[in-house]
Image (cartoon, rainbow, N blue to C red; front, side):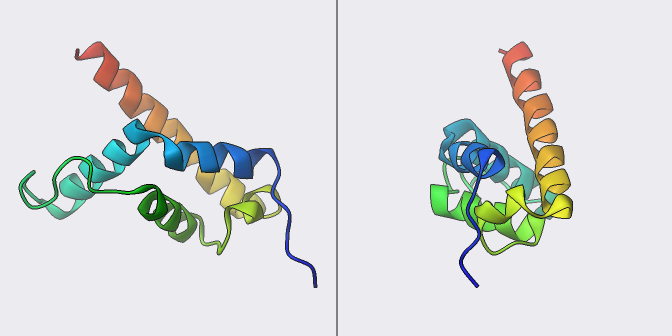
Length: 95
């Protein structure tokens, strides 16, 4: 079976993983979730690859290309984007 080709959602996901602010969101989300101090998990810890791995795990996929073919993964990804967008907007209003 040929590999699944990614479409628009896969492209958006790739760009999101490259976004420094998204990776900062993942740093702060993980600190909050596990009760870690900034010294234990500093800002800037998540790399682009870490973001990709986290996103694939959260969406239960092996490749971002699956986002365009798996309704569960697509819905999960859209929820992640919405939560990140809300967090990003909150950060902007606090500066």
